[in-house]
Length: 223
Image 1 (cartoon, rainbow, N blue to C red):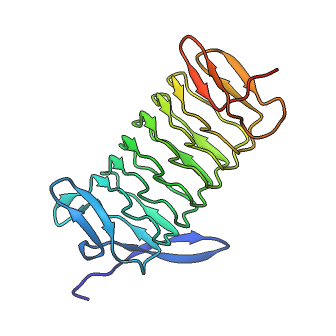
Image 2 (cartoon, rainbow, N blue to C red):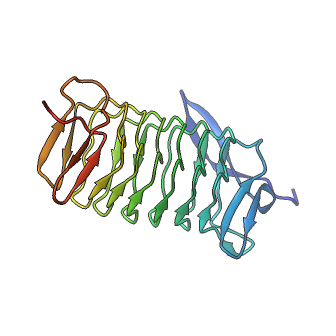
């Protein structure tokens, strides 16, 4: 096998005991900008369970570009620790059920993981903002938002299955409908020490609440 199609020896359990091998991408599977370390396009759509290596031909993979893996029918992906930026719609519209984000990740752009089947996500401590619709339209029941996140974009976690959310004190702004159409009945606002409830026990509504240090849009104010 001179042209390497590397099948990892480690196997990932998927579903009810079915094991699927994960395929490590080679330079022939992607379009890669060596000057920025960015994967700009995935051109091998046959592989559905992939591992992105930390480098291609000695050049570190530092970013996943805009739309790079969108609409690729991916079921699982391993993102290397070297990646610091995940671009707009980079992994959107796939069949991912789980994702582990690199610890050094700094940027999660708009719609980066939208329209998958992801059930839980841990946002790394290095992330400062979660952009518009980044995790919208998944199956999230659990989200861990670390202390240093300052802003959560509009629709960032909309259309999921969240029943509760804990926001760190670092959060100073939340965009419109950030948690729209989940199963939340209350959202505690860290900087105000208040809880704004959706009294109709429906999805979060379009209404803005402003305070001295903090604003949140899309949270229903109690009557």
